[in-house]
Structure formats: structure tokens, C-alpha cells
Amino acid sequence: MSTITRKPRRVVTARRVLALGASAAMIGSTAGAASVATDLSDPQGLIHQIEAEGEGAVEIEAEGEGAAEAEGEGGAIEVEGEGEGAVEAEGDAEGEGEGAVEAEGEGGGAVEAEGEGEGEAAAAGEGESEGGSSALEPALAHARSLLVIDGLLRAAEAQRGSGEDAAELIEEAAELAEHGLEGALAGELYERIEELEAAADDQGFAELHERLAAARAEATAADRLEAISLGLRAAGEHYAEAVTDGAVSDRTEYLEAFGIYEAVKAEADALAASDEAAVAEVGAKVRAQLEEAGAAFGGSAGEDIATPEASLLHAAAARVELSALKLR
Image (tube, rainbow, N blue to C red):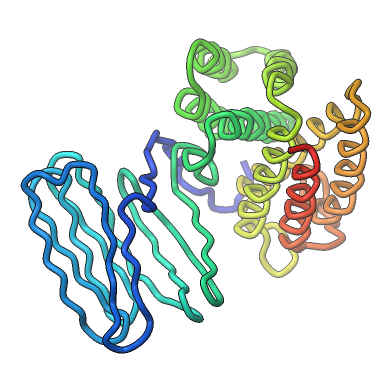
């Protein structure tokens, strides 16, 4: 292992992200005009108190089963919940522009959202896998988890190939298989990945790459493309943590970014080889776009990086997402 300080192993746990649309608080931005719309799943025994404080402020308290408490000033929101079926979340919110909301939550049903500009909002949930795939449609979350697991295994393979201990990355891949997938496949992959730690050779990696590729091939082409986009975003997040002043400062983070990027390329190659002309055409274009993003990497060692910018990965993710729309 390199002398660079390694991050503690992240335990990947399964969480649920609650959709706030069913119990949304709509906050007006003009003075004296605050409106709240809530729809709690179990209204029995609830006490609602609404009080406006400042422009667009709202305070909501609910007690009993499914309890929730929200308090905000000037458009900010903080949520805490106690009781059975409660939402456990704490967050501070700041708005930029009209209708903007930025919130961050922790715990079961955590929600993180950020919006900029009039009426714009982007939301992301922290779930059981990298990037919060629990907030996605099941089929897309499944495709994305398969891709990220493959990326983590490629990272572990590169780490072991350089003579370093890859137990952390292998364990992370196993936990994502257990919590990010469902059914018999989850158990199968979990057991096979766990066996890699004690394996005498690296043949198990190649076999798992093939198994994961076969599982991904069962998804629709559109879901596979969107999974590529999400995988690139995850790689970009790791990359931003890994590179400082143009050089690799966290090798494990860098390897995770590099491994996911390599898995994404393999998936693009598979799509480009499709028997369906439309899918093959889009796959070939995506593969070319990934080559451009490759300037962010200097191989598994991270040496001689041409363009040490995470923005290359995020830009490629946006282009792939547009390509996926053509197959919807």
C-alpha cells in the first residue's frame, strides 16, 4: 500500500430514500404568503401546527406515529422525526434564486437536494450504493450497481497487481452486491466476491467481470446507457477526492475512479457490438466520448495525467445521458 493516508473502509448499508413529493412543503417567497401542502401516510394521531416566520418561512410539527418536525426561516428547512415510521433527518437548507432549495440529510430515509435558479431543483439520495442508487427506478439502480461493482473489482485487481492489499475494495464490492442487488444474484455475487480475498490467483476477477457483463446485458439498452452516465458521475466524485494540484493524493479514491471508468468503457464496447443498429451506433459514439474523458487518467498508477480535471468525467456523463434519451 502506498504511504498516502487511506480512508477508513466505508460500510455500505441499505437505506430507503423517502419521496418528498407525497409530503411536500411548498414555501412562497413573497412576504405574508406562505403555503404548506402535506400528505402524511398515517394521519391518525397527528397534530399539525403551522406558523410563518419571515419571508417564505414555515414551521411544521407533527406528533405520534410517522411524526415529523420541520422548521425553516427564509425558505430554509430543517427536518427531524421521531416515533414509529418516522423520518430521521437533520438538514440545513439554503436557497439560491427563487424556488431554490439545498438540503442535506442523514439516517434512514435521508435526502439531499440542491437547486439553483428559479424553480430549479436537483436531488440526490444517499442510499446503499455509490451515488444513492436507491433513489432510482429499480431496473436502473440494478444496472448501475452491477457497473459500479465491476468498477470496484477492477480497482481491487489493479491494486493487488501492484502488490498492495486489496481487501478494502473487495469488501466494498461485496457489500454493494449484498445491499445494492436483489434475489439470488445478490447472494451469488456476494459469496464469489468474498472468495477473492483468500484466492491464490486473480482468475476470479476475470470470471466475475464476465458474470457482471452477462447480468448487465439483461437490461434495456437505455438503462445500460443511463447506468454508464451514473457510473461516470460516481467516478468523477471519487476523482475529485483523489486528485489535488494535478497529482494523485489519495490512491484508493483514484483507483475507484479509474476502475469504474474501465468498467464503463467495457460496457460501452458491449453496446457498440450490439446486433441492433441503433444501439450499436450510440454505443460507438459513447465509446469515443469516453476516450476524450480518458485524459483525466494516467493508468492505474495515476502518473502523467494529461488533464487532471474531474469535469471531464462529468461532461462525458452528461453527453451519455443525452444519448440514452435517443433510445427511450
